[in-house]
Image (cartoon, rainbow, N blue to C red; front, side, top):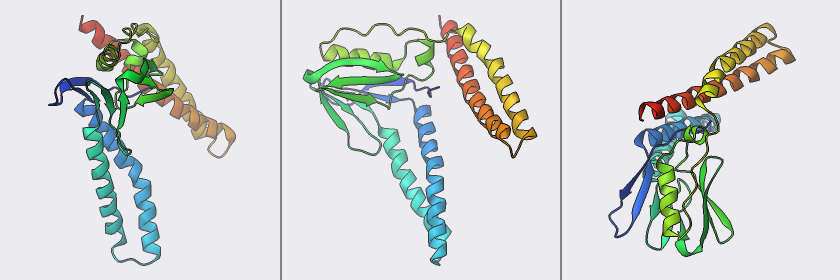
Length: 229
């Protein structure tokens, strides 16, 4: 399942320009994910420096990792999508921002939960504004508003309402099913630690946990939608 990102549109200070960013909670979560991803690189760097007897190898590796993470976290925090009178500007975390001329945009769609802009035969994925659980529930969110604004500025028809993929009943039914899958996987892993069933059990447990979290997230999104009516 995808992570949820509530998107807000706000003027960016320029004339006839709008900027959209993910919610602070989503950006903090993404920055935390980068900290987790940098950990193996930090450990490898520490080991290499330790082998060649560099003084304070651990502190040196930690300092470099903190510098890298600070840069990435700042890029995550300011990442945005900006609509001007002539361009759509897609902010990137590592690469340079992409500028898409409105006159060349031929389609604005959602593909597998990702806002996608087609221009000049290329597809540009707006990864900074994922639909999250609403990809499955079909509920409208800020990413839909962003897509509608870009389509209107490019002179394209309004996007159709996204369809619900998983209903509340289905997502609720998946919760005990995935919990049972986790229990089965754990039993296989514990009883056959060094055998193939144990390996299969480990994969079943991980798959069940991932789908269980997704089912809970989608169910929560459905409930929020009903309470908001």
